[in-house]
Picture 1 (cartoon, one colour):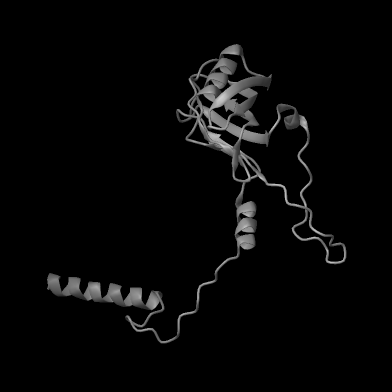
Picture 2: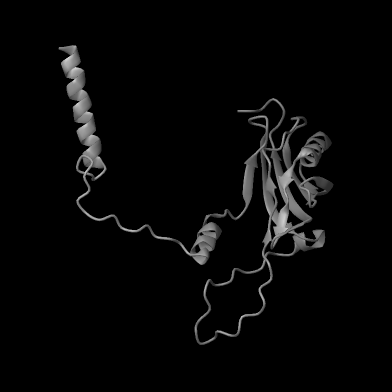
Length: 192
C-alpha cells in the first residue's frame, strides 16, 4: 500500500508540474515565440537603471560597520564639486543637434571583497579620499573629515589601504581615480 501511495503521489506531482509549466505533458500545442533580443542601448539603459546611486558594502568582520563609495573622479579636487545634473534620456526631436564626438564614460573601480577593519576605538564616521591606481591597488589615502577618535580613523585608513579593486575604466583604458569613501565604523564591543 505504501508503494502504491508513493507512486500515486509521484504521478500527481508530475501532472501538477506539467500543468504549471503550460506544457501538456511534453507536447507543445502552440508555436514557441522567439525570445526578445535586447539592443545594446536597451541593455545600457537597464544597467544604468539598476546601478545604485552609491555603492554600500559591509565591513568585515560582520558587524564592524559599512563603507559607502560616494563619488569617483580622475582628480581629487573634482570630488568636492557637486555631481553634474542628470541628462534626459532622449532630447526632443526639434532641439536635436548633430551629436558631438562621444567622450568615454568613466566606470568606477569595483571592490574585490569587503574591506577588513580591525575594530577599535569608539566608532563613528570617517570620510576618506582614496586613490585607486591602474592595477586596482590603493596608492594614497587622505582624511577628509571625521567625528571619530584617532584609533577609528587609523582602522579605517588601514582598511582602505589594504583594499583591492578591479581598476576604473575610461572607455577601454584602465585609469587611476580618486574615490570618496565614507566608513561608518561600529564602536568596539557594540556589534550586533
